[in-house]
Length: 203
Image (cartoon, rainbow, N blue to C red; front, side, top):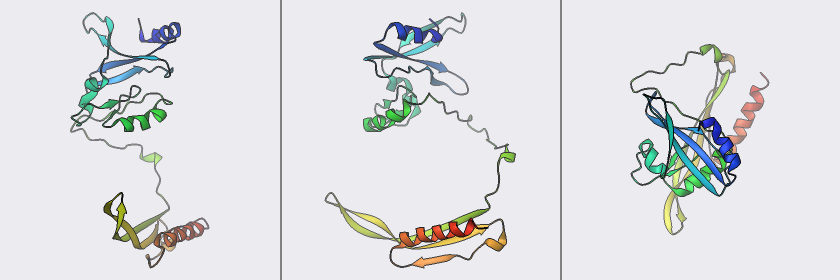
């Protein structure tokens, strides 16, 4: 049965959903999704691995009993991982997978490709870039304040001052650094950002 026929199988078997994965060698050995079932609420779900005989070209499917064992090489986590059946991403904790599933299942599977070790990556479409006319560079100072957290004492970073400087490709619109130190530092910072925006849009 071809991968293109899997939807027909699902249509004839409304209690079963099927995902088909394949093992690819290029650019690096990796398991990737070939077909992800759109019916993700069915009582029974099956993960299959499609294997191809290089000599004869024949294909056959094998049942994946444990996704964690199949793709454990993707992570340095030494314990069993919790694998998303839709994108094959590995998670160290079950709650991380539970938080991931609602968003992942509404999108088609994607594949992240990295360059081979030692190969340099260069951005060539420089014509599609442009220089930002204005930028704000900000820096904060803070102090540590002990707070109680469930019986444990931890430190919380409390901002005490900030510095903000506007730079521009138009030198006449640049400003010297603005420094604020006093109460309600974050309120003062956002007020300053609002004032900068109001002034910049007038240029």
